[in-house]
Length: 432
Image (cartoon, rainbow, N blue to C red; front, side, top):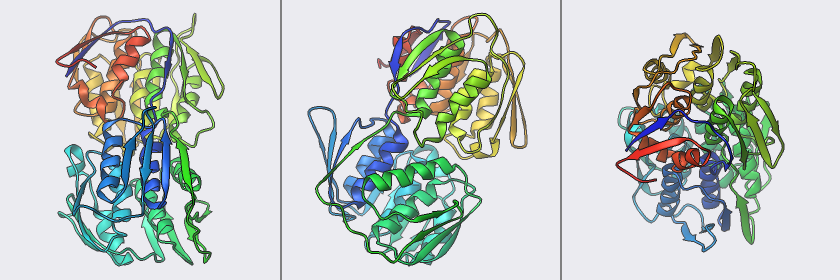
């Protein structure tokens, strides 16, 4: 679908979407916990649906309850199909591959869209060390995995993504790993590992000793499987909520509910960036009250997004209307997203009259008071669609976003939520 955003003033209140990072981890933990799980506030993005399909293919039963929550029944990893499809979810493939490898059955792991071009060499290198027979398409999908995975002492590279480690931690825990250590070099996005460990704790899985994020040791103590029904509430998503916060910061004011400042999610760091840009805000565990400065202009800022690369798109939208040039570190984390996100941001925001320069790991954004009325393309990247939509609130005229349906990957109700906050949103081809 194509969406046109016209210059608008944001005002009102909204609720952040459910966190797909939390939801997908909860699906994996529910599968390997070997018990019943009641999931409250589940997410319904494409990635969330993909995670639910994966665990069903691996033997879990999923029931939609009348109040919108989910009941997941699991006896562990007991595949009912010889293949699973992770959709376009990077977290899904990286987290579920080691879990799928717990089975002695030969399972083909497939994906869609940009996931087909993402590197999977990690599994070719690591899983054979754990007794798993791995066959990939020259380091790409599909993967063919045959276990069972046997936990062992290994060394891994954490520089590309922490998501590989998330899958290993869950598979080791569910396999009742004893006296083994996962050593990690150059781990990125440490807060996401904090989220993984938090979910594992909530589901009663065996927890490793975190040795300063350089190694994770599983003791000789046996895992006692949880009893009864586990209840887990999916928290609000800072990655998606960041776009609502930036929309209010650059074009009005809003109260956003459902975001916990004490969350382990890395993207809560958006609050620090907003503060550096001079945004007025008040927040607690119930709400975030945010508004554009009434007199002074938003000011340029510097920010290190190495551990929270998903913040790049909303940060670029923010920087595009700040006075001066802003600098964001962590560009090298953007190459293997739904698009080559650094270059995509540079090219699509250029159409809006925003100059972006990339020098190694640093992105510089020169703010402007005249965001151009133009036509941009999502490049089939959900966060590009949302970033250009937010920037369009301050444009000199309408901005059309082509292939805006990319938002369904993480935040299907985004345009509807933006409209509820006062944005002028016109949707072609599809009604949200």
